[in-house]
Length: 556
Image 1: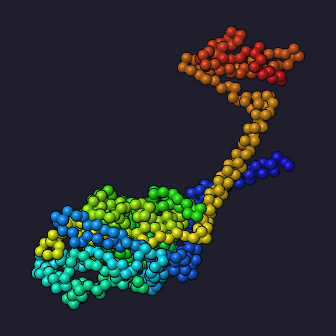
Image 2: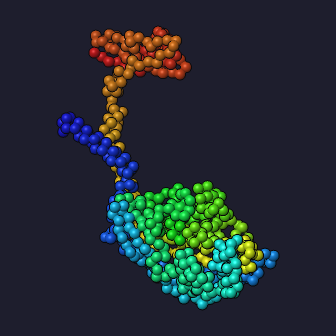
Image 3: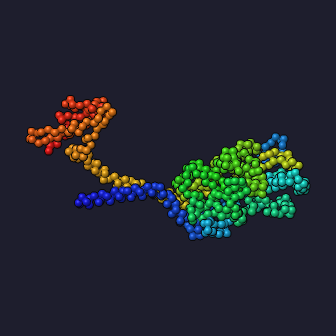
């Protein structure tokens, strides 16, 4: 191979190395984003996408568990009784949920889809701890709400009159079935429908009435499909055609996930949001720990104090205070989207709540393992892998002046019920999800190979030359280093020795001229000396004499 061909080959190898390094740096900076875009084109929600069927109808069995709080001493509920309200938790009453998305309408102008959620619930007696015929004492919230609204007006006398006519008390006793999906008729609801039908849009009372089989219980939902941006997939756009609810400021913004899809490429410093239609707000979930689900690494995002704060710890949540009233941390006033009733939401058993709520009652004991609300997500895809927890409905009982039933009651946050859903992906689905982090890892490996290969190709020829030089004979080294032999270190006190001192010409016995190259020998504590007693110069150098074995003699 000629030198020209070898030179071209070397250039090609170096050029290839530069290209590999450039490609590696580009992939290092953009691989995750590139993969996210590629995945988005296939997974974005559409009538023909792979994710559509699993979104429309859940492929996993769903269990809906409900717990009711039975008020065991309502007759002692008055100021001065010396007794706290005592509650007994009943349940779980388990229902098998069969959900579906109906009234689906696609909007290509903003890449969103509108729909209603419709679910059927079937009681699972074998998996339940109790019967739907169980009798439960709970707060008479209907009469108390009517008394509060009419307090100080002529309507107060009307409420008192009908309370006496219908023998109303501070509590009602109903079956579990009536309190849940079936509902029960209340005389005050019947009166309200007659006098002010626009303020009473329902016929019966029940914690889950009329959810069973209803397509309108959760309202009209419009969410993004992710066709234009996979990070927006599953994020709610409007609820009941609103982008802002009754809460003030940013607290009223309609945003967050509907629970099926979350933003991809999540980190441990991120907060994910889940929109809760019945609470008219998004619930923040903060990273708490890294776990594994069927061998797949996932991030667990949980409801912390951040989710139930009213400005105590997180100033940005102060806009959840209603009419300037901020409750202690732990409860959420949903009155603005619940007909201005005194209903508050919290984690079960006032988990993460202010101790005052538990101190005012008896029978509740919060535990993280049972009452934590969490969402475990595969961070690269943003797909839920394990979901658990729920919320508790409470009624804020306070005295009502002029009402014989409630004028002498204490101020207490009364728990009524809580419900939860726990869903964990199957091992088969987990294996499909595991492909996402695997592809991300493969991309990172390819990036490393490109960078390493590029460095090897780029540095191969210079490294080869240096190695060859180090292994060459002394004369070849001297010819390369000859231009460096004039180097000297000068100081303010002296100047570099003249060129004649570095070279000395002698006549050899054969008559040839011999040139001695006087190399520099560096010492830290001596000046430039000539072995023959010639010169002292720089405080850092000494010239080696002709007699020294360090002189290289060149004959010419």
